[in-house]
Structures are given as structure tokens and as C-alpha cells.
Image (tube, rainbow, N blue to C red; front, side):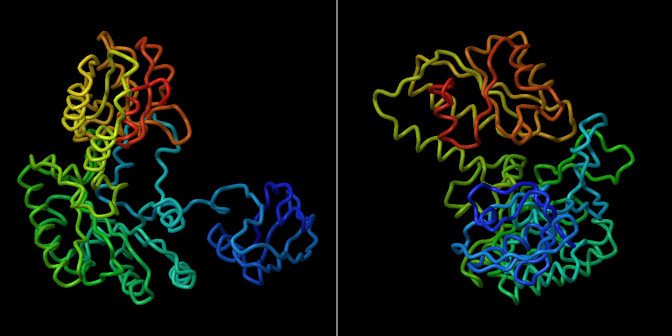
Amino acid sequence: MSVTIKSVEPRSPAAKAGIMPGDSLKTINNHEIRDVLDFDFYSAERKLSLLLSRNGERYRVEVTKGEYTPLGLEFETFLMDRQRHCANQCIFCFIDQLPEGMRESLYFKDDDVRLSFLMGNYVTMTNFSRRDVDRIMEMHISPINISVHTTDPELRVRMLGNKNAGKVLSYMDEFKAAGIKMNAQVVICPGWNDGEALERTLHDLIALAPEVESIALVPVGLTGHREGLCEIPEITPENAKSIIETAEKWNFISKEYTGAARVYPADELFLKAGMEIPGEEYYGEYPQLENGVGMLALLRETFRKALSELYPEDEPTHKHLTIATGEAAGPMLQGLAEEFMARFPQTRVDVVIVKNEFFGGGVTVAGLLTGQDLQKNLMGRDNGDFILISCDTQKSGEAIFLDDMTLSELSESLGTPVLPVDNDGGALLWALLDPENN
């Protein structure tokens, strides 16, 4: 096997060794290179022996460089390989609930261990090969983010729709023995993996501490497009409160036996339960932010900290702004807007809470708002000089919403510039103070 080199950085170790675009890389120090993990791991050494081919002819080069100094090679794809497709049929899969007619890339289901390590994605382990497991331990790839959902093997088979889903849980025991750190995710589906099933899951995961560093409890996301799919009830306020109480019980046990709390209910569970989002001390180092765990707490605390550190000469550059957000974050952002206006009474900040009609169901997070829902809720009103939205509404690296409306199209239709803002309280504050330099 070999991977084709797309480009060679000028004056890099690879360029000095005579490697050229179009060459194929086969081995480094006699280790076969199949993907980005192999390449990054084996190319980190100072002295390298590379086997390549050019026009079908093999050749070898010797390279001496600084440890961890990049070789200077770029490949056709980020992974240097095809992205792995999910092998499951999860009862709660969000992609199965997408409306028709969206761009094709949104319907791709990934379950790739390499993206877990490189990008923080969660994997179910059902498409791990023995080589994957051995390589994780050999390279000490850590942490691995694992979608567990339940530690009951039979229940996991039913929830993931994969006959191997129960057996692969044993990999977590191997990872613990090898000292591989893990973060776990449990998507709570009422009537499936809550109640006694959740008690068992938390017991089993905490038993894998300290290698299992954190456990996120995330409410199932249900859109309005579940025709023909497994019936899953919405999480009620009573459900949410019960899940939080279960988390608190097992955090008490975890603190007693492992020295630290490890179970983190997602922000949405607190909101559904009608409970206040905890303070920043609850979340430690925020190990599960990407799962919506502590995101609102961090936003609130960093906003207030930044507000308290302003200089007397710091003043807003505009008199009227609008923040458009989803139903989940709306009340907290309304509170932060009021704190801002109390400090700067000459500036008006409106918070418009946008109901997600594109996805429907119980989708309330700001990051899944589409251009057309924002347009519908903001059209015809006085939005001031700028409209601020979450950067999560935009496709990575592009100014486009999930419904393919562009940011410029939305701004033009509203007659007001729409600005994406990072999910950080300091970034929000500075966007309110000076949106043009955000």
C-alpha cells in the first residue's frame, strides 16, 4: 500500500531529500504508511528512512531533521485515506432524521477512530479492526472519545443496530489496561437506556476510572422528520430531573472512590428540568464542551469576566444590535444582554429567540438554526445596525447555513449585516462593543 504525495513544502526536509509531488510514500523506517496516524507517528523521529516510488520505480531516501519537525509533505486528503462510514443503524441517529434535499455531505455518517483523536469526534468502536485496537495502544493514541450509550451488551446491540455492538465494549477494558484515556458519551433515550440501564452504565464506566475521565449525558435529539423510524419519546422535565439526580448520585460515588466527579449532564437537561445551569466549578476543565456540556456556563462566566475587566474608556460603537439565537440559549443570552445594557444604558440589545422549524421536533440549539428560520424571524423588524449569531450555524470554513443559504444572502434579505460570533463570552462582549471589528 502507498499514499500519493500532493505537494512538497519548499525548503522542507522532504524537499531537500528530493521528494516530489506525485511520488508515492510506502514506508517510514520500514513501517507501512496507510493513513495520517501512521504518518504522524512514524515521521516524528529525527532519523528517517523513507521508501517511495516514482513512475513505478522504487527509491529510498534518508532524512535527518529535528524531532517532531514536519517532513513537509501534503497528501490528497486530510486522512490520507477514505473516511470510514458508520456501520450502525442507531435508533436515535440524527442523520436519519434530516429532511430531504440538503447537500449530500450532510448525510454521510462517520465513525472513524482517526477523527476521534484528531478532531474530537465520537466513535462507537463497532468498525474497529484488531489492528485499530492494537495501534491505539502501540501509539498510545489518547484520549479516545467513545459513544457508549449503554454498557448492557444486549441493549447496546438493539440501540446501535449492530450485532457486534456489545462485544466491542471489551476494548475499553484493554484501553484501561494500556493507560489510554477515554471520554464517554451516553445519548439518553427515554424508555431505553435511562433508569436502571443508566445506573448500570455509570457503574461500569466509573469502574474504568481514572482512564475514563468524563461521561457526558446528552438528551436524544429528535427532529420532526422521523417517519418510519423507531419511536422514542421526548425527554420530559421529570425525565431530565431524574437523569440529573442519577448523575449527582454517581458523582458522589465517583468522588469517594476515584477522587473526582466524572458525570456531566448536558446543558439541555438542566434547561428541560427547569434548573439553573451550574457554575463553572461544576465542570472542572470542561472536558465535554463539544457535547454541549458546560457551554452555557462557560459563555456566562467568560462574558461576565470580560465585562468586569473593561476599561472606563471602552464604549459601544453602535446604539442598537440584535442577537438571534435558538430556544435553548435564549434565556441566558437575554440575561447577558440585560447585564450589558445595565453597564451601557445608551445601547439597546434585542435578543430574538428563533424556533427551529426547518428541523422541527425538539431541536432547540443555536448551532442548528438555518438561514430561512433566521430570515423568517428577523424579517420586517428593526434589528439595529448588526445581527449577531452563533458561528456554529456556519459550515466549517464557509459562510453558509445548513439549508445552503449563504450569510451574504441572509444579510442582503434583511438589510442588516449578520455576523457570526465565536461561542465565547469575551468574543460576544467584543462583538457587542464593536461588531465591525469582531
